[in-house]
Image 1 (tube, helix red, strand yellow):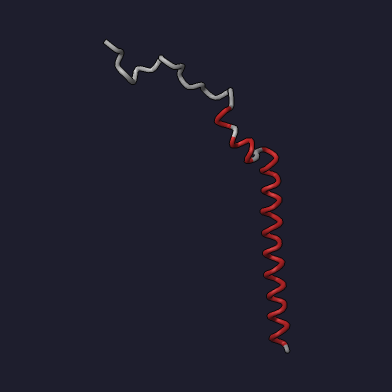
Image 2 (image 1 turned 60 degrees about the vertical axis):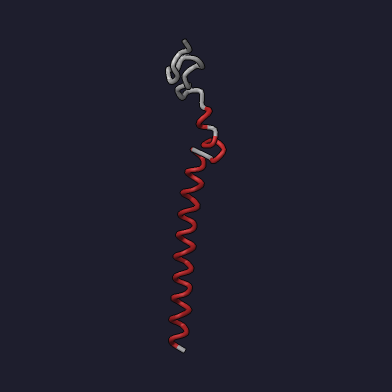
Length: 66
C-alpha cells in the first residue's frame, strides 16, 4: 500500500510540473503576441518604411540594344 501512495504522489507531482510549464509558456506566448502576430508578420515585406526595389529600367543587368 505504501508503494501505491508513492506512485500516486509522483504522478501528481509530475502533472503539476507539466501544468506549471504549460502556464509559463502560455503566458510568454500571450505577452509576445501583444507585440507581434502572424498576420502582422506576414505583412512586413509590404511595409512602406522598408527600402523600395529599384524602378523598372534602372538596372544594368542586361546590355542595351544596339
